[in-house]
Structure formats: C-alpha cells, structure tokens
Image (tube, rainbow, N blue to C red; front, side, top):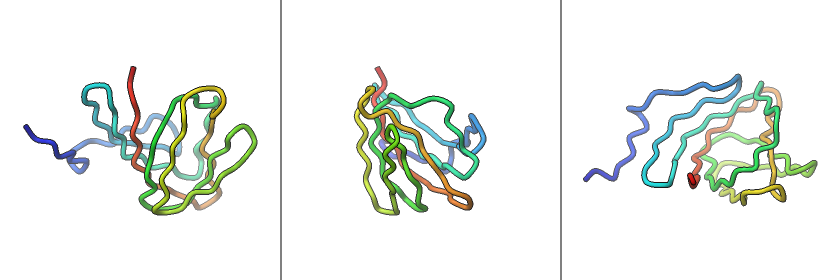
Length: 105
C-alpha cells in the first residue's frame, strides 16, 4: 500500500475565480493543496471545519467581521459551525498556497 500523496500527478480543479486546488480523499478525510489569489469572492460564509498549513504567501480570513492575518508557516484550525463561519480575503497582488485537512461526513 502506498501512503504517499503525489500532488504533482493530480490535476488542478478551478471551481471559481481566484481559487484552484488538488485533492485526495481517503476514508473520511480530504487533503487539499489549495491556491487562493486576489479576485476570489466567496458569496457565502463557509461553515465547514478546516485545519491548514500556510506554505507560502499571505492572506486574511474574515470571521464574522474580525479579520486575522496568516503568513507562511502558520497553522490554522477552524471549527465547523456558525460560531467560526469564515471567508478568505486576499488583497490586490496577494496569492497564498495552503494545505488543508478536512473531515468528510
């Protein structure tokens, strides 16, 4: 059994302007190599839980009006639910690569 995740061999998926990702799902877990860039507009608040590691770039996350800034090397943990609803915010010229870990129900 191979436990290596070879992101280089996976295709990029671009669901909207300003976001693309590569993902693998195994059992009830998903790992996504994600790039966010300026131009990303999230129309709704995300209520999903995420854990992530910022590989490169900087960006902010808006938690119901309170912004937190993240930089390379930062680890992010967001609980699922209304209390931690969130949206990624990227300023002009910003791009971030983040590795996200998510449980799938």
